[in-house]
Length: 301
Image (cartoon, rainbow, N blue to C red):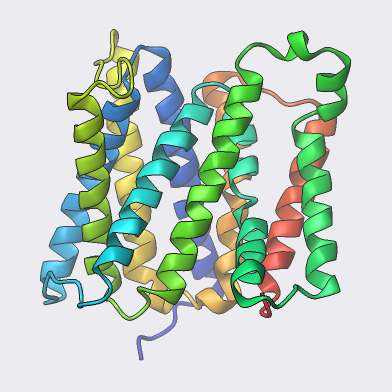
């Protein structure tokens, strides 16, 4: 059993990883604003992650094989992560990063509903109450009253951006269920290698057949290249940090700290991109984060 890291340091590590993930999305917005193609961004991110995870799996001495009976589930996991990546980056390109991440991070609600649909066991009233709280926060984050009063004032990209973020949450929900219920026995690094490999294949296929117009466009200015490099570096480093140290971070107690990502995105979005949210949206974001942390502490999903 690996020696646990002292809790204050473990929390600092998790906050650092969450900030890296938020920085990845802010960097993606910089890249997209300078003409970087969506598929190219995901290829860069996935390529770095695949390289790191492959080295890690080799270092750990794992064999690169998927057990019989699990190959279809492994392919499904890769496709879900590919869909989540496409949709989340599409959302980040259209709406403030914090809004995209707050909507995306409602996936625990969808996971509860998916488990309900599969097991036929309804969630407890406590879970229903928490989900209602999160949804109330989302309504505030999306500034639904302002939307209803003046849809045009929110801009033409607001609705598709939110739709993409919600689609990303749906893809990630299925990915998490598949990981927990069908692929839990596989070494994490091996599972990640096959997942990233599938993502890269999907992105290359999409580029070759022009399924995403301009998907492989390169940046038109230095800012775009910097954003592209940073999104790949931050995602690869953050995911590796979490993966390598997870056994020592007491995730059962400390996992809710990862929900710092939307908070970090608010701060970085303001500093780097000049994106701001209204006081009502900030209140909604606080409600969503509190609800997600509360939900993550409830065991009986």
